[in-house]
Image 1: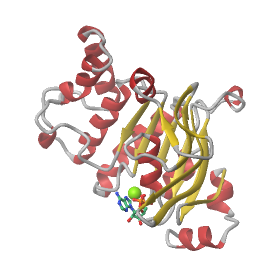
Image 2: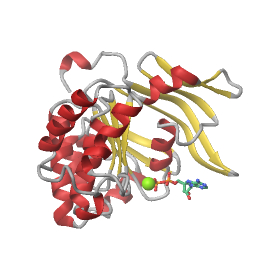
Image 3: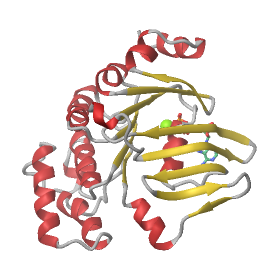
Amino acid sequence: MTDSNRCAAPVFSMEHVSKSFGKTCVLRDISLSVRPGEAVAIIGPSGGGKSTLLRCATTLETIDAGSLRYGDLTVASSDGGAVTYAKGADLRAAKSRFGLVFQGYNLFPHMTVMRNICDAPIAVQKRSRSEVEAQARALIAKMGLEGCENKVPCQLSGGQQQRASIARALCLNPDILFFDEPTSALDPELTGEVLKVIRQLADEDTTMIIVTHEMAFARDVADRVVFMDGGLIVEEGSPAQVLGSPQHERTRAFLSRYS
Ligand code: ADP
Ligand code: MG
């Protein structure tokens, strides 16, 4: 992140978001915003609400209270009472501002890599095939997937599939990318190649939220680390602060498992 971006308006923000499944409260008054060029790592124990946070941010789940914004577009807001969601063109516009990459099964199994990447930009964003295919070829090269254009997902390694998923998300030109444990389904030798491309994106100031169990990666790549447990943001700060000298006992207990 460059200094000039520190005061810029957030690309994404959630304010006072709560979410329950039945009687189980999974997100408790979460506020989080991300500035242009910032890479935020979310860490924390399983069941802490990290995936739910990303699913709420990306409208795969609805929130019970609070607000969600992408830049100047309000996706959801509540004035103390029920949450109102944007509809129609406004909701579609907001959805085109983010990309999501999760553990596995991101790709359509019956489509080639090229079609996986190009389908939504052409069908949803109504862009020209030639322009989208040129961008897709550049992304395929950037992700180290030359020669995989016409393969279907089952012909690729897990690491190649994840890199194709990242290319697919990037081809929609999102303002922010969300990653939910992008390497947790991969063998260690394939994890490295996926982390390398995410690191490259961070070096290029791609705005991102990355849920990860890779602490060394979070330390190297994130501008900010957020520790979540029990549906709460327990603490956040620079990687040196949160990973190097955590203030809360829960953070220390969690991190002790990784040292
Ligand atoms: P994390 O990603 O940090 O492991 P999750 O967001 O997946 O945590 O889960 C947080 C809590 O919410 C867990 O207790 C989980 O069982 C519960 N949960 C998640 N999704 C659902 C759902 N669709 N229905 C009911 N409970 C859910
Ligand atoms: Mg999860």
